[in-house]
Image (cartoon, rainbow, N blue to C red; front, side, top):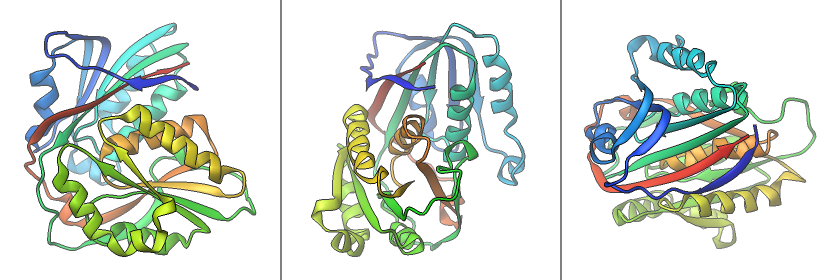
Amino acid sequence: MAVKVLENYELSPELSIECDVFVSFSSAESRSEYITKNHPCKFVKNFVLSQTGDDEAGCAFSAVKELKLYLNNFEESLVLVIDISCMPREYMAEILALISSAKIKEVELITLYALASFSPPSSESVINEAIEPVHQRFAGWSTPDSKPTSLILGLGYEPDRAEGASEFFEPSDQWVFVPRSPVTEFFDEVAQNNKALLFEVGNRHVVEYSVLDPSLTFAQLEMVIGLLLDKTNPVLLPFGPKIFFFLCLIQCLQHPKIGVWHFSDRGALRLPQCIDASGQVAAMRCVLS
């Protein structure tokens, strides 16, 4: 499937979102229920995913498998709404892989992301254990290539993680995307905790993007990927807001040679966290055909 349209989507508390399928993720965060409680949605089928111990051990996602079977009911068109506010990256990748490989002529995908209220990053250390594609569908180039590797980093606010990723790849060229949102405390933490990396990269290769403007962010990613793709093999490594991660996955539909990778880890980020919603929602509409 290719991206036909990608634009910002305007949510209204008064108007219900109508769709064939609604997919969300239930977690310990109260934020996981924010959108369903504040923005009504009329759907034919609802899939509420959750993470169990078996899933963490690497077993198949049973609810996602059920979604795969349900998608077989559609041939001409499908309207799907996905709430990624608290959804793990592996689930997002699996769902988009299912959609992109489904035998449906056109899919209207509305993606919703409730921004979190600020809470400081955990003081417990988080160890980057392994570097790998987030999903086989989004692994990037599939044949040996003599081109050097370039890196597009999406910064998060956890100390040292992005810098460790940069050191791992030793890229021939790298760009850094820095999130800005109405929750301004996040930007300050991102800048402080990635100070050394930002200094090393330099201003010419730093792109600030708005978390609430997915359409513009997608265009910014497209511009940088276009600069890198002819002479390098770009790898996208998105820490930070999940909406940026999802945009990176969609870029892979445009450019199959690029990959979205991630670090698996252990430590504080695996512990359940009770994070409230900020009241701000990023929303986009994407038509795949």
